[in-house]
Image 1 (cartoon, rainbow, N blue to C red):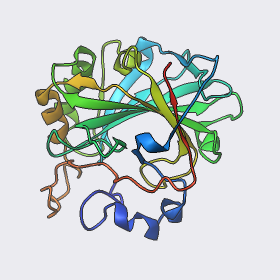
Image 2: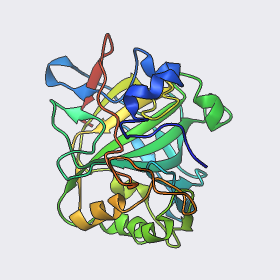
Image 3: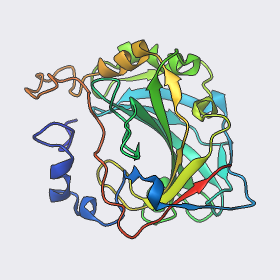
Amino acid sequence: MSIDWGYSQYNGPETWAKCYPEAAGDRQSPVDIQQVCIKSFNTNRKLTWRYVPENTEDVTNTGYCWKVHVNGKGSELCGGPLEGKYILEQFHCHWGETNDQGSEHTVNGQKFAGELHLVHWNTTKYHSFCEAAKHPDGLCVIGVFLKAGKRHPELDKITAQLPRVEYKGQRAKIGVPLNPGLFIPEESGYYTYQGSLTTPPCSECVIWIVFKEPIEVSHEQLMAFRNLKCYCEEEKCPCDEFQGFVKNNFRPTLPLGKREIRECRQ
């Protein structure tokens, strides 16, 4: 189950374009969201979302993050910058070795302890997630910044299962209803721009919606993330700078180029 890319000095983001040419494209993510570059975004279509807590299925260790699989039936994301209806496919997280870094997007250079990504696909225009991922409007990813603070009760439902998925490829049922909507900060505006997946193949198929306000998670919850290992149980521990643990699994920011970042106060 080995993967040919990761976040170490041997297979990290600076090497990805060798095997995944789109990683060198001009609409890549993440980016630094700089106040001087932001345009105002006015719409009479409020961004709305709906999720079915009972349809959150299981969590797996992918070798580079934890990922929660979702049965998207009954979920819906629409409005704001989106045309049509998008449904939730999965959500996952990126984090740092310490609490002062870990987010993929940054705001005026500021880093956060982590970043949660809720990955949706356009069911109005496309028939499958794989088909949608071939088009610029195919996917929408909601990005939510994490900062160290008080414990997040909904996140506990995931961290409780992480010891069961310590090694790459392991999977565990969540076992209780989990509402992804509780990870989206209330009363927060957002930034939106056209970009890419932040992991290989780095396809330029994503409408990004990055919420301004972070949510708080506890230091203990972040430590549970950092205890995951990037290799299978039957494999030898890789001799990398992280000693086989999943740490600093974030892609550095890339040039915005000619793209616009728009701000919506929601």
